[in-house]
Every structure is written in C-alpha cells, then in structure tokens.
Image 1 (tube, rainbow over the protein chains, first blue to last red):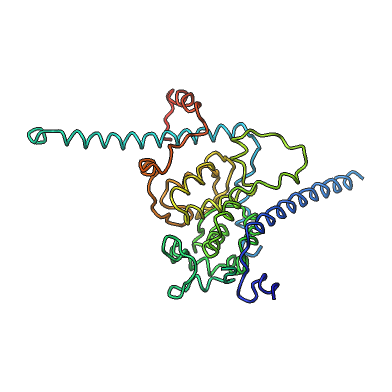
Image 2 (cartoon, one colour):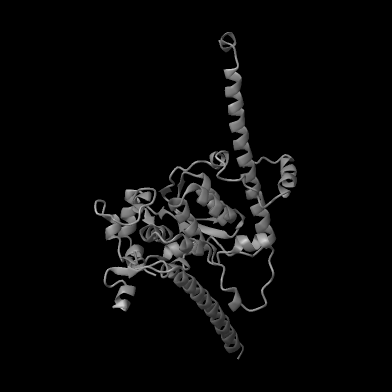
Length: 52
Length: 67
Length: 235
C-alpha cells in the first residue's frame, strides 16, 4: 500500500519532508559523481584499447 | 528522451553553459553586470527624489508664479 | 496534509479546488490559462511530472539543461516551466524550497582536496545544481511575499554561473545573477506575468528592507570611474 502511494498509483502521493529532500539531493549528487568517474574510467580503457 | 527532438539537441549544443572555463573573465563580466544594476538602482532613486523635489517646489509657489 | 494528488485534476478544478492558496488564489492561476493548457497537454508533464513529490521532483530538476517559458510555433512549454507548475501544485514548505535554492552538497562526504573558497564566493556558489536553484528562484518570486523574495533572492545576484535559456526559436546564454535580476525587476519572465510587487524603494521607505549593499563594495566607485571614461553604461 505504501509502495502504491509512493508511486502514485492510488492517485495520492505522499508529501516529502525536508529530510527526504536533503537525502535525495545527496543521493543525486553521489550518483552524478559516480557516473563521471565511470566515464573517465571508460575513456581510459578505450585509450588503452586504441594503443594496442 | 521523447520530448526532445534531434534538431533541438543540435540547437542547444550551440550554447555552452559550462562554468569555470575562464573564471577571471566570468567574474569580470559579472562585475560589469553588477555595476550596471547598482547604477540603475541609484538612478531610480535620483529620479524619485527629483520628482519629490519638483512637487515640493510647485507647492511653495504663489498662485501668481504658478501661472 | 500528508499527501496530494498525483495528477493536476484537483489543481485545475476551478470550482472544487481545496488546496493551499497563494495570496488568496489557486496557485495554478499564477500561470496564464493558455500556458496551463499547453503544460498539461505536454508529454513532459504527463510522463515526467506525474506523481512527483518534493523529493522526487529533484530527480527531474537536476537533469534540467535550460530555463525558459514556451518555445516554437506551438508554444511548447519547457521542462523548466512544467516543473515550476508542479511546484505550484505541491506548494512545498518554505524549508524545502530553501533546500532547492541553497543545497550545497554533503560536505562531510567530500574528499579533502577541495580548494578553499572565500566567503562571498562560497555563498554565491551554494546551490550545487544550478537549474534546480533557478527553478526555486522562479517559484519564490511567484509564491512568496515581497520582503522574503528580496531577502532570499538577492544573495543570488552574486552567482555568476551560466544558464542556458530557451527562447521562442533558439537558445541564448544568461547568468544566474541576470535571471534573478530579471525576476526582481521585470514584469514578464519565462512566459509568465510576474505579479506586481512593491518596489525595493517602497519597501525601504517602509523600513521593511535595508538598502542593498552590493558585494562589489568599495569597488563600485573604482569601477564607476573606469567606466566613466568614455564608455556608455546604457549599452
């Protein structure tokens, strides 16, 4: 039921608290940093491949 | 993303919003914008004050002078 | 109220609207009818904004790549405008909006190799996700009271980060400080008529606001002199 509420399937959405907002932003930030790191690693790997 | 079509993406790439490419130039450009704002606000106050002074001046005129 | 509707039916119900009011009116009416219609007809609204709350809205807002109102011949709404409309539906608590505006990253988590920035810069640069910050600024101008608007938004006049702005037929470059200045001084921004608020001067006369001190400080006079040498300020 809570899941349904969260996904909006009951037509109702639970209001978010400021703590949830803060946590969400921290998570999004970490995700972004992580993705950038992967991009760099990926680029590095491709350069390695190109060298061979 | 469905709400973007290819043309739009090309168009969007023509404008680069990356920060920190030349911090000194970016800061200098900001200073100029900020200075303009400060000046604009000052001018507004001066205009306002001039208006008030003009109203005062007219109030103090004798009926004859007002003609 | 601990929940709200996933869609905008209640918000758009002119007679039956029972949600929070902004300055005595249904918040949706801060946008013009034609714009509201285009928003609720758009894919972005239907597919990306359905069921968002103040936390999940961040997922979309951090992905924004530009600000803007409507564009193209059909006057399509930008994602920025759609999310602003979503905020008018949610009417988030003040502290939530301030979090959007000023969230500066969880510093404890960061590695220790950060460069130390001075105070002004630090304050200006808060708001890790710049388009989220711009969105919050736009919302604040629409939904808050004049004194709060000035006090909350003026510090952003020192944030010179670049913003891409979608216009009717293309994109232009603007800056956070420029956008905030537009919000404070113009009548119309992002396809939206900004409600007429008292001027800063009037608020100062009522002693509700102190005169603004530019972060340029004493530099104003120096720059003023330099600038006076032949160059026109009106350009």
